[in-house]
Image (cartoon, rainbow, N blue to C red; front, side, top):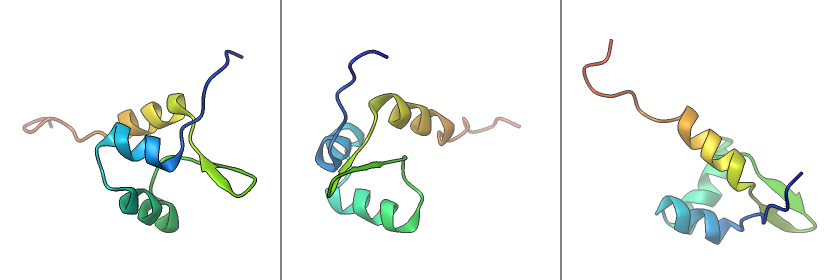
Length: 64
């Protein structure tokens, strides 16, 4: 497995361009990307985040 640096919630918020509060809200509601608890810290795998993002993309308008 390649050496992948995990993202902090702040890194994730920066990547997605959303407020940090949104990341914690998604986590509390179980609707955000999967996270790992490392000790008392949350960490996100960038590969899984990008997969989650692709899976939750809106369909183009007019697609049926």
